[in-house]
Length: 352
Image (cartoon, rainbow, N blue to C red; front, side):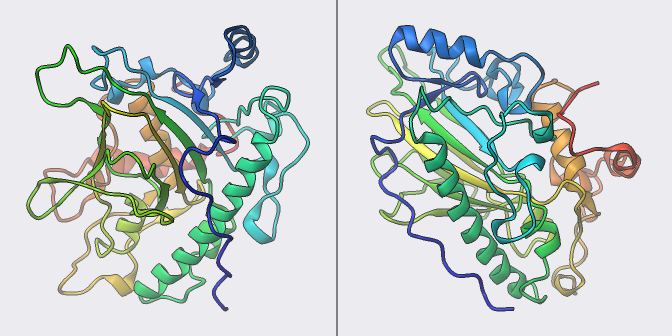
């Protein structure tokens, strides 16, 4: 099958007037409006039930090192594809006129919580249009990556294009006051790899705060944005499928002391029931089998458990390593098959 057409050129720069910053404590969204409007919006958006797209940052143990002493809060909004928005065909989803809180949208990642049209005219439609463009681009890149792994370009259609569980995140990092600081520059986001297949990142051209760790010299290097271009990160699932030929880089974000930073990462993730394992075409003498199979739904659930529920160490793909038995976690390897027998991706995350 031919490659998908390229999507329209993404808007630039990173913080146009039509995209107001969004405030959250792990995605309890509040637009930067007047104080009265802000309170009204917060009240309307208060979490009534557990929703992994609307958890509080205080429950995220991996964010404890992030500018706590400096009282810096990172504002963000997540939204993504849901069962209630998924239909067969182009881009895999449509926009329905039903409430975000409707049970038909329930899924492991949680339901969306857009601000109302009254609070943010045109915001929802603009964001979905951008989401469609990023989905189309990610699909094309996944086809090219499939060819690089020695399989047909449509190899991942079932696991990605037709069943992907992707989401878009809007980040706003305010300026950090360093007047009382004497040590090294604090972090806006701690070091991590992206868990999914592929990340498409629109950076703020004015702020160079993203850094990537070079795996050969172990040094951190600043990723300077190229105007009009997107930054592409390979995710953990691509690293497993390719048996390490595609590498998921560790990266972090420094707190900025001069100007605020905006970013919009799109996380292209597999379907929850997808079984990710090294392809036969990627295993040879130079690249011996490196990983056991991993179910994306289990990996995503475990990542939520590490982030929000503080259930021990956060899951990593090294837990499923075949080559490094010291890093391998046999309990997680054995538990995931049992977990998937009763797992329902159309239910919200629960630590129970």
